Length: 226
Ligand SMILES: [Zn+2]
Image (cartoon, rainbow, N blue to C red; front, side):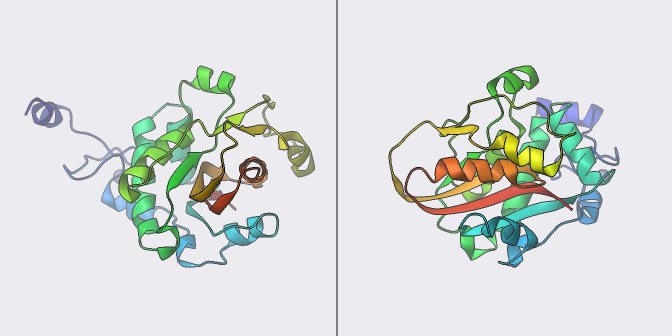
């Protein structure tokens, strides 16, 4: 009741076009959502993300929700999530991605979502891990639990943005640890990250996860950088 009243005076606005949101819409209006560049990777097993990782590690499924391009709407969304701390946006985008994922049978038996961890010092500075927000939204829709403690980051790596691709590979190897050595033989783990670029970070996570016995492993990311 009070919330309805507040909404009447200060209606929620779309984060992209600043238009009023309908009662049923959250964060991004229907029209802006329609214009978001979706990859539709989840409908194609051998999609670019899957083939890019599958040569390096064996995966059950891999897909991304949106195409990330310089100055596009997806970059805007990620900026709001990462640098302006709009965690609820991450949750909502996770939900929207999960509705598409639910339509594919490949994640039907998934039973654990694991966000790619930030280094603790970075998380302390930012106050949250953006991949965790995305995981919360996916978890809600797919009704699958998540574990934010299973993977840990061990060494801080300096900002990778100005490094060459080769240097980035060198830089991330061995930076993730598992907090458990118990076998996960009955577990289909879905690793979740915000953006897929070179795949080096995800591959490093996968190597750490493969130290225990996992039944199946899949990867989903909110965005895919072309
Ligand atoms: Zn809009």
